[in-house]
Length: 318
Image (spheres, rainbow, N blue to C red):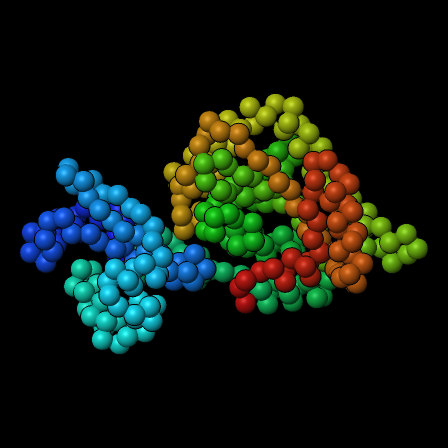
């Protein structure tokens, strides 16, 4: 319940205060005690002070502490908060120091306002589910997803609510449906391609291969990543320029800002690039999970593939 420094870090001040109040006499020894740490084992340390006031700790056992204090082992083993009188006194003292100790950290007004605006314009999971279940085309799904890019931040941002999202992001000789800039310090870029829900992710034949349209999308995004890696420093410079313009309020490439912007990445550090392709429906989740695993580990750089069913399952919104 202590809202301030630990006893260990403030032991000199504790000792000086006790001496100034006359609670203890010069030369007194203190026993520093922590309850229920190290998997439930309490600790006791004998603290002595040099002439200059520097502390010295010597670990002692529960039995040694009880002997020095001339009390029962059971008394020292009793957790303070299990004694109502002491728990109430500690709570009163903590409240006197800080009335809001333990309360959630207050966020900046702009963060709260941005989160509220995002929530007010969210596309519901049910709306996407409806399109998927009737086998919507790629164009129909893209039209809905472009209305709310927080969908991709919800799934792929790390830390949570630290991201910028873009639609139709130009890349090499074309563009990627959606792109996410996220992380802190070292920027992570997630490239997302979307296909329709009008086919099954895995073909219903003897071979049971991943659908051709997913293979084409993966091939396309792989070629563009190859172009990026051919001149990665130039690409890094370009994406950080786009990030800075978006964070300054420019609606470049449909820029969508999370509650926490700027996201706080370092333009001088390397970037990480990840890729996701979403499309098709799940017919047999067990079979398809194996196929997805084989596909993702069979290409370089790796590409994560999702059916619309597996993607929707991961959304936290309703």
